[in-house]
Amino acid sequence: MSAKTKAQTLATIRKSLQGRPQIVAAPPHAEDVIPLTMHVPPPAPVPEPPAPDGETMRADFKRTLEALNGAVFTVPAAEVADWLLAQLRTRGYDKLLSWDQAFLPVPGVLDALRAAGITVEQGALPHTAAERAAMLAQWEQIRFGLTGAEAVFAQTATLALKAGAGRPRLASLSVEVHVALVTPGQFYNTWAAWLAERGPAAGGDLNAGSNLVLVSGPSRTGDIEMTLTVGVHGPREVLVVIVT
Image (cartoon, rainbow, N blue to C red; front, top):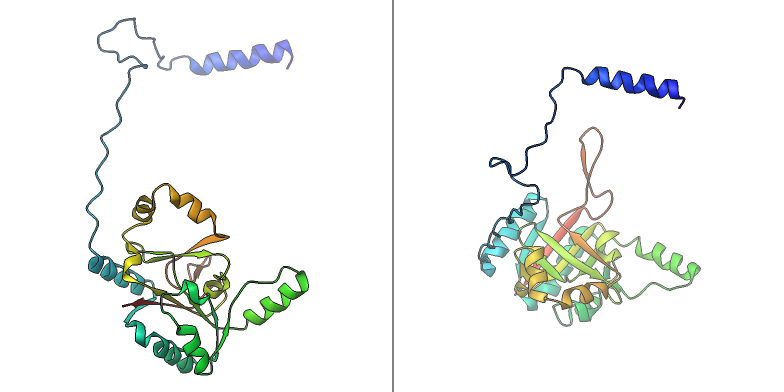
């Protein structure tokens, strides 16, 4: 910028400021001036409300999930295999993609389904590209997924699913129907309450999985015209079974 241009620019700024109210520095020690360095204490923390009891949390979860077009069932452990078999046969499915038995809260449920003629796919994806692609192509044809859960958050009707060895994420993501088996002891009012109970170990536990998926009802996608579509990027149905 030339000296002439600079002078013209400064003159224009001075002219535009003429007649405008000016900020005048406060005199030192003025009684009505609060020094900028004065420390304003933060507001006192608001205590967390008491945690609701288990029955209340389950009722809140059910009400919220149903509002999101999910469904909640309470099934005795001895009847879960028959319940799953009925869901599969009603939809005409004879295969399911499942977490390993060790991560499901109903002992022997996968063996019972196999004995009834259901093909159970599970395990880890191969590491080589060709074998991995072949397995993915096979799994992506399966419409029914079965998982457990790491925790359940009542306030938002959310399932926390930690993927890892024996817990394929596709069992909750690539299927049309996702069934999650949970127990009453896995319910927490909020994500914060769950982390608070786990304490310092929470971070390490979460990092141990390949990822953590938070599921609140069926997949929902909205476009620019505000049209809501269900099941485009995930399951069309989310069924949560509280095992008693």
